[in-house]
Length: 207
Image 1 (cartoon, rainbow, N blue to C red):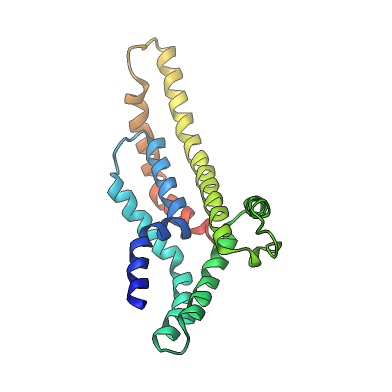
Image 2: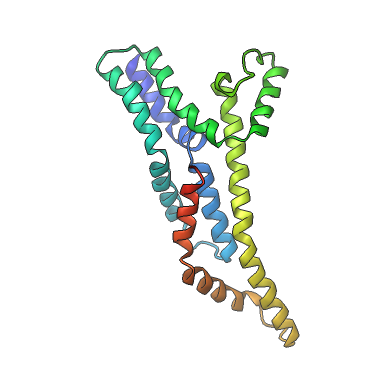
């Protein structure tokens, strides 16, 4: 049974990585950053995914450390059973997810529970069933990613508008604004240490 559980966990590990960690927010923001710069496949998807995985490991390290100390290590030492290990492992992950979930999304999850007849005992976030907390967490992560993406788009949109206005004023209608704005956006992004600011901002957004 234990080997079956391990094989099942390995099979669903990619889905768990996306749904229960910071990976979703990070990879979406990185993709929006690439689109805001006007780059199609640079950096390539493999690079963005690798960066998102490494940042996810960095952000989730305290959570995984807590799971290892309270659940995995005692279970491997045969001090607790599998049921208790699962309960202990859920606690650090639940705390992380609750810190990142907006109250509006928790209310959404409560309303869905109430409609399904499972709303009893879920008045407090800590008592909400884990299967109801996951959609609320994912919704909050998507909202946070799009908010950050909106802020990222603003300066590059301003550059596009300024370049387009200057070209129209000069009567250069046949010249694509992208040819001028793309090098300018890359210059501004590089001079401002954009990647460092983006990575540090993403990590601190989970604090």
